[in-house]
Image (cartoon, each protein chain N blue to C red):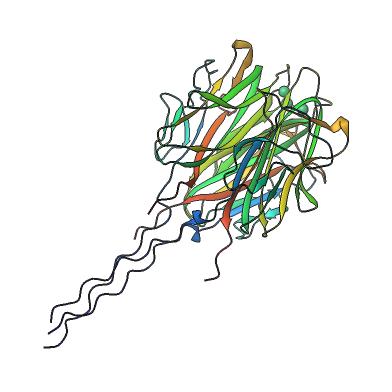
Amino acid sequence: GLPGISGMKGEKGDAAFIYRSAFSVGLTGRTPYSNVPIKFTKIFYNEQNHYDETTGKFRCIFPGMYYFGYHLTVYLADVKVSLYKKAKAVLFTYDQFQINNVDQASGSVLLHLEAGEEVWLQVYGEKENNGVYADNINDSTFMGFLLYPDMDPH
Amino acid sequence: GLPGISGMKGEKGDAAFIYRSAFSVGLTGRTPYSNVPIKFTKIFYNEQNHYDETTGKFRCIFPGMYYFGYHLTVYLADVKVSLYKKAKAVLFTYDQFQINNVDQASGSVLLHLEAGEEVWLQVYGEKENNGVYADNINDSTFMGFLLYPDMDPH
Amino acid sequence: GLPGISGMKGEKGDAAFIYRSAFSVGLTGRTPYSNVPIKFTKIFYNEQNHYDETTGKFRCIFPGMYYFGYHLTVYLADVKVSLYKKAKAVLFTYDQFQINNVDQASGSVLLHLEAGEEVWLQVYGEKENNGVYADNINDSTFMGFLLYPDMDPH
Ligand SMILES: [Ca+2]
Ligand SMILES: [Ca+2]
Ligand SMILES: [Ca+2]
């Protein structure tokens, strides 16, 4: 007899952009506690829920290189903050306050993370270093996003 | 008869970088008007022309998650600005000016946009809140870029 | 005869992340020289080694559109810096210092680079404009990353 008909065409290949992880959050109007993770609870973007607003920590699910950044309103006191990766402060920002001179302080960094590693922002020092401020028309914000996921081995 | 020949190989998967949208712009030396979109007309990058320098607005063509950021020189007056998405102010930055103390204020955020939605920067309040400044050796800038395009449904 | 077997699944789509180029660096505690590239030698990320800590310059290997940003601690003197692309200053940041008022100044921009083009940060002006500062708990940082590699022609 005749040969059978051709087999079906194969499936389309996988798309490249399957790894996504990003958050963008802000303070909601009260001075954060010192020496513990700052809890940002105003959510601009947190689709994958890798940022936990109950702890203030971002948790890495997809290993790779991430961008982290923050912008802080400096009001009533100086601002000293650190970006923590695991238990270690890796980036430090200091801005002094003077009366009638509200300021803005910001920082950003690229970090490679393994799955399970956490990143957060924290005031270091005591009350006199905790001028991080926000209200409904003054934001203090924190964000992060996966930029280069680690390569698949296959 | 013999089996038919194999089906054709499937199509190649989607590349990640087929959707591109980014702009990076600066003020060109005059204080912007208050309460209307700031028109940044110094162009660092606007290859896709999704930022319109005649209106000061970025218009989303590819739905997805975007980064937006700005850096403002604070001179002669305080600075109060908002980042608008559609008709709503979503991010607020305030920096006070004092004589002999030029400052820098910045902000950034991640936002999901639908096609057609517009984003821009605007001074809120009146003259006393419009210290946004630029000249040929002092920049005030605005940028945005598509980070994670929405997945194709197919 | 029977139908042939199905074709093979298509190849995975092109990943954007086959082209990778990023660095994130900080000052290590001494005021940089004026009018030459600032040498940042605290390395947060430089996996591809496209940033050269012996010169302070990033060198483009993969043509495309890059993000560059910096955050500077302003202490003891005013800060005037420029971001250079090749021999040309393309972005300018100025922040005045006043006693007891440490400040933070930042800038960022998107630039298209050809292979071989270099980008760096430089203090312009003399000593009185060189308040860029860092110590072990105060960072001044610089970063860049490839966002949209130029399309392959094929
Ligand atoms: Ca100020
Ligand atoms: Ca200042
Ligand atoms: Ca200050």
